[in-house]
Length: 253
Image 1 (spheres, rainbow, N blue to C red):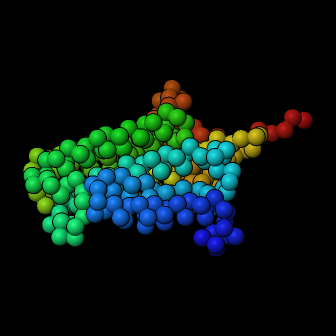
Image 2 (cartoon, rainbow, N blue to C red):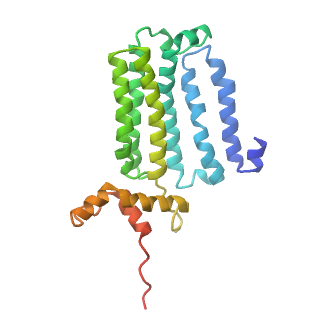
């Protein structure tokens, strides 16, 4: 904490301290006392997503154009951890019970209750990319890209729900890992931050370069070309990437 205080920012140290306090002081004791420990653990486990933002932006994070993307990422991480750890607890429920842990899936003998508990979180996670694009903090390519990992994870849940077993639950658990990796990669590529105070860009140069390259591969841009510009505004990300990559107009004589 001292290194974070004198190194990146005091805010980063505060978030790190809160993470450790909630994990060691609240979540860990609750493991053997209340099944709601997972909810506290999800918050503690998602706080590090804010750590990088705070280290880069400091106390100006709240007023930064990156505040909304940071909040979205934190929310996604909180929601994701619930079905992830519910599945893990059901698979190893005998070990959890021997250790004296208290979790909702431990009393579920069939797996149906665990599947039912996981479903609302997957519904919310499927809606999050659309919400991000609607709020203007990500391109509409985010929900397009997230459709596949979401469908794969949802299919694994349906298999677990229809045929509850250690095998189907394990596939559901592994599906959570592939979903998280894919969503993080897609959000890295398609997140947006609008410039403020007359700045030309609120994003680092590497993201500007990545946006330009991905715009060239965007299927919406290909459709626009094929249909002679009829879909010129169909792809927010591609249009944005083209605007960034196009040279500025010549100065008047």
